Image (tube, rainbow, N blue to C red; front, top):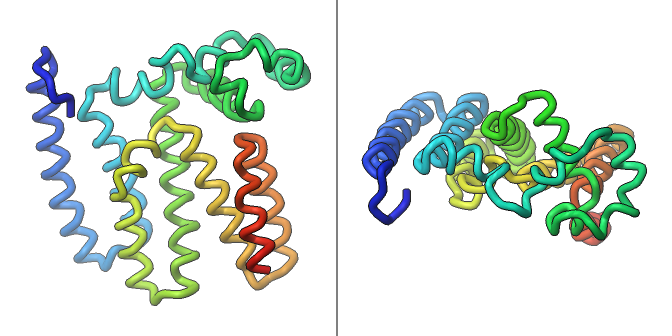
Length: 226
């Protein structure tokens, strides 16, 4: 919620109170259903989108994708051919905006593909939230269940989605997709079925490496555990 007077302050305040009421009834609903994972996923998505809508559709949904001059969006809209962009990425990299320049080609191509499919930045933001919240909660819940009973794991999963960083960055941010892929890699790594574990870990690590050079940080963790 913006802390300065403006034409949308009343609307933003009403949205914030509406979200607070939604949270109260959603939490009561989840408690009655013992925080079952499928309900936690739905509530989590609604809360992530709703908490960003407190700032309005433009600032809450569209601007995180397209508002800054250094966003992936501004390089993505200049791409004429995705295959050529990928082929020429190394040559183009020094001339790209800072976010695109300091990452592999995956983030800008992800935004490019979503824009081609959905057309509007606000829908791109929602699509990222749908994918990242759903898969992250599923993977995290499965990881929790390796150490906790099912009811505790489900409740802990709900607490995870309430973390402020999740509420803020799991809408529109490529970092949310990166976190999701790394959680997926960790989940598959810990599976007892070795063939499935190897295939899933390699697949998710490869996808994460296409989005960030930071995927390397998980490799010594996996190696140390092994």
